[in-house]
Length: 87
Image (cartoon, rainbow, N blue to C red):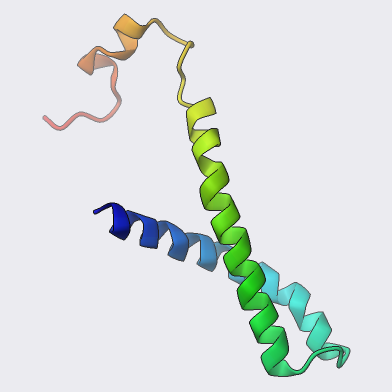
C-alpha cells in the first residue's frame, strides 16, 4: 500500500510540474540551444528532480501544519473532534 501511495504522489507531482516546466525548457529548443530530444530529456529530468524534492520536503510541511499545539491533546484525541469519521 505504501508503494502505491508513493507512486501516486510521484505521478501527481510529475503531472503538476510538467506543464510549467516544459514551457521554460521550450525556450531552449526554440532558440536552437538544444534539439527536441535533448530539451524533452532536460524537462523530464528537472520535473522528476522537482517532484522528488517536493516529496521529501512535504513531510516537514505536513508535520508543521498538523495543528499540534493549537488545541489540547485531550480534545484533539476525541473522536468527536475529528472532521471525518467512519461511522
